[in-house]
Amino acid sequence: MSDEPVVLGIETSCDETGVGIVAGGRLLANTLASSADEHARYGGIVPEIASRAHLAEMLPTVKDACRSSGLALSDIDAVAVTSGPGLAGALLVGVAAAKGLALALDKPLYGVNHLSAHVAVDTLVSGPLPPNSVALLVSGGHSSLLHVRDVVDDIRPMGSTIDDAAGEAYDKVARLLGLPFPGGPPLDAAAADGDPAAIRFPRGLTAPKDQAAHRFDFSFSGLKTAVARWVEQARADGRPVPLADVAASFQEAVADVLVAKAVAACREVGADTLVIGGGVAANSRLRQLAEERCADRGIRLRIPPPDLCTDNGAMVAALGSLVVARGLPPSDARFGADPGMPVTLTVDP
Ligand code: KG4
Ligand code: ZN
Image (cartoon, rainbow, N blue to C red; front, side):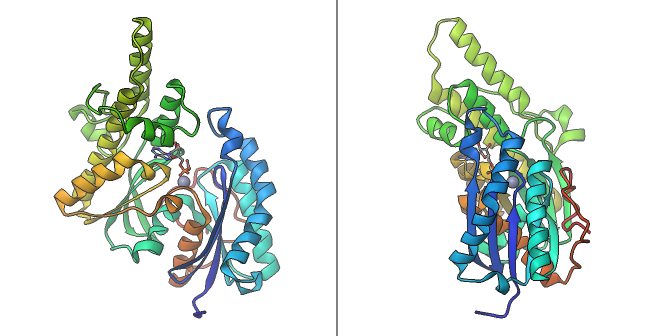
């Protein structure tokens, strides 16, 4: 075992209870418990259910992480925890657990930013990030374009969604097509047999008039409404709804906008690396289109494997590890959950 500090990371911002252990740039454990199944019948995340599930799963998940890394708790040198952004009650469970752990072990504690952690996790797979990169984070809770000058202390927001997150759009459209929650995977699968050019759905905030105020922002609620109207009209006319074509056309509209804006953001700041993270990064069409367009423009594309794209503890440990290596001070013992934590703040002071 090297003498790199061992950092344990805890993630509870949404419905995944994640615990990761990282030393230097090496991932030693990444264990996860998810309450996704408990939310399925409500068609979306129920915060109270998520918080209770975190409470139930926290200790077993920490123990699993230690077991799978072959480490004892006494081997941990620092603890990192997502302090925001996310669901307040869910964050509180992780923050309280991390405080207890750090106090008992007498080790430093870092409250870190969930979005920065989505970017940092990629360094476990592809090594240090070039100093001038762009990140596209797309999940059920966020859709952001970030200018990452330095993942530890210089991330600037370029744009974000002005209504639904990309994953939320997937979940809502899946629901209106009768597919289960979360809607991304079944919609992605349904789209495989469809024609992406069958229906021309709108590309939100891409009109010339949107360029001034919303060049790097996203909007998916108009797209969702357009799909709903199209399906309603088909049903009213007594036509069968061509599920595969609707799914493929919707997916094309989402991927087209995400990739177009991400590539434009790279051009804007002169970045030659694009990182994509968040649950929607698992989407087959998004990956394919991003690969094509990045290759055309000489942009290096970095997308972590799916289990590191969705919420997990490794991302928090990865960011914690970079923060420790940089020598930043730990968070004040009084830090709390910060549901609206800005991405410009990597570590809660
Ligand atoms: O990052 P994540 O696990 O949790 C947060 O929301 O923070 O992302 C979950 C989201 C869900 O909305 C889900 O439908 C979407 O990611 N998703 C996908 C795919 N797999 C998961 N969306 C599109 N295509 C997929 N293959
Ligand atoms: Zn996330």
